Length: 393
Image 1: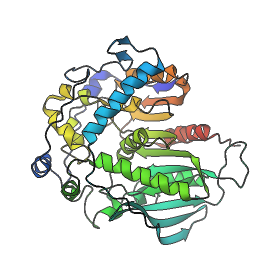
Image 2: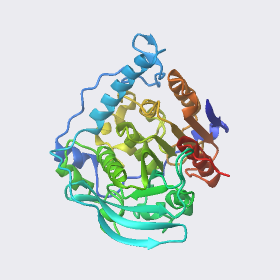
Image 3: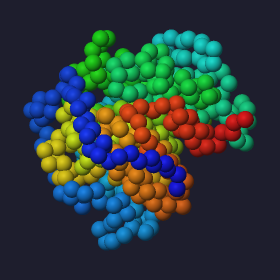
Image 4: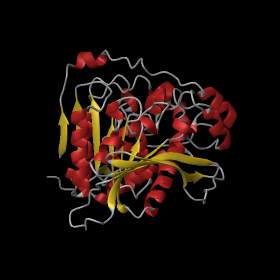
């Protein structure tokens, strides 16, 4: 069991308002429902209608004590989540070549600007960072393939540029830091960010145009689809160890990492910082459906959130038994009321324990705002080294 919890006075936590949540322009839930005609899904789960979070190892027939019983529950969680995320309309995959837009040689790595084929007509802009001194797993030859990290950006219009350290907050430059540690990194613009919106516009710009094309889908579904396309591309690179691919992100990048890992089995592990709180403790559960374009079907439940058919502790648990690192803070002003994560960490450890892999979950819950400070990143990077079998002097 690997998790750290540092508590603060609960009365202070109650005072967190989450007032920083606001709706991005370019999307309204009412316009989405009117244009798509989507109705509330018919989902019956044991969590639906229950104001409390049901324990992860609480099954319909009693306590869950075996992997088989857990995986039956997990499959139900994934099916419920898939229903909420929806399905695309006649999606066609672009089978063309990757487009190279430019290359810049930096002191410790080469940064290549490219477009990865994804959905036809919607290529995925990305930077590929190739370190000059790549790391190799223990026992692998020095000239062998290198583990790769997919780095997902936070909610900032420049998207991948901040994650590469080109603009914005240096604490968000995970790709720059990981490439300097010897990892191949790929940093895509997810839908609604970077080169996928007009210059000068805000995140989620014209999200309704996406829903006109795919009325039954969701941004979360599209993000997971694109992540699979990124993995497809990494598998074509001779420098990349295709059996050693991880994903990391903060905030928007965190929940994108979580969702992508659940639905993409080729991702070995996920690192998520400040990516969620539970729906039933959130004073703004509409952040997922009304304030953003991420999963509009959840909007049918926000007026009475206890009716939601699942919650985030179940979503996270669907990653098991693949390794998972979670960083969360107790004064997070974006995702408030995170003190219940202490118990959830214990429950997640028990889920991993069914597989004999309790050490594959690592959770940190510490004082602080919505950020991933150097001490947290250092912990995460050391953990990444361990997952990939990288030894450092």
